[in-house]
Length: 297
Length: 271
View 1 (tube, helix red, strand yellow):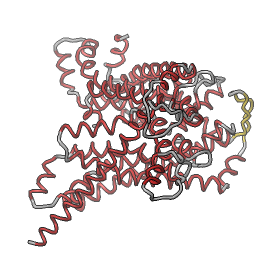
View 2: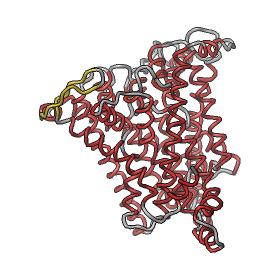
View 3: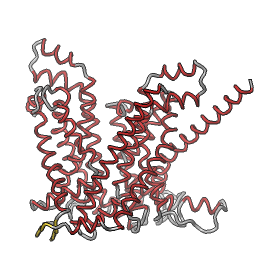
């Protein structure tokens, strides 16, 4: 086995990559092309096998002309942008705390940030059902005990529950890239700024923030794409009636078995998602270039 | 003088506010998991916090629920198959991407890392369609292939990052000393790559075990993996048993964190 790997591995040629390229062609390229074609077809499915497939533009035109789809995708984009902004607001201070901490505290922060990433998203979402849920939920009990509210608030199964839960679940994805860029830069730069008489806030504003831009870009891309495409959090915290693009595709595929509609929805999801990745990357690169030119950092 | 004092005061308040938000975020990251673990030992048959008693009953119930045990086995199998496939496909590809000297090396990197941009839900649906076209119904096999395709980029990226930092001179020295290509790979490159390979294996295993976005469309109808089972459990079960399942998963992730931090180091993981 090792011998085979070694023969594959030690060449300078293309061929060690051949198996992976073939694998990805069969399991990614061809399925994505099929996905596109399914959006243009009328499909009859029986027991998970396609019985017939006829060319039609009906689904595509119907969906593109349907206001429900427009609203659903708008809701998804709004939600994901809000989650991204909240993750930045709550995540940046954690990375700053990390930059200012000693070895032991740094380790503790890394464990607190990485451990949730290794835990199932369903488990982390479940925790929020317990915290936000009905009358016995922790938040409602605390607010009632403090006398701040008279009757329990309805948080679970609303937009707010999805927003809160998604922000917490995706927070590590913003913090890790920020920590990576902040620590990569020379600490000397930071110290020089302090020696020149800059206060810590001025150093933050003129040194640390500008140099974090690429990290913000990476983190925002990760948080946005996951928030935009996950159905777990909205399904569990939004109840059955919270509809965004991902839950719509999920329901079309799993519950109502409308495969043609599901194909169009997920194609739109993929295209818009890649558009936003491009937009975020462009924004981050342009800002970085602008900062260099202006000499802010 | 008063101007300098004013700056010092706003500086202190500003930095204190940032620290406060940072600490709040850290608490919010950790607290929910701790609450779930606490609830899993509660004696009441409904979920509430803080717990009023201590019992292992929910864990006993968990191990007496055949669907959950079955789901755990399915997820374990998928996790191992996915890890094996990603090792076999990913390590050689990473080497070609970094050490290769051929036209289109850049294009190869872009191609093999592209799946990372495809959302799991889209890939899952696309592979379900492809399977239906060639009469391959959802099963453990289809699920494993789909999840491996989804996560392969992560394995490639971790190994590539490590390889880029290895000094090519080491390999050249080995060759100059008369080592064959196999000997160089076996005794020089592979040992240096091991930390990255371990970390990649840990991540791909977790994804194989835990993935739901791809798995929910491609899993076999009789072989429901743990995340799919857990998802319906969370929606339909109100007892602390769900907390016990969750706590068990949290324990597993802590073990894996220990493995990763002792092989690759937590700091390096994030570079």
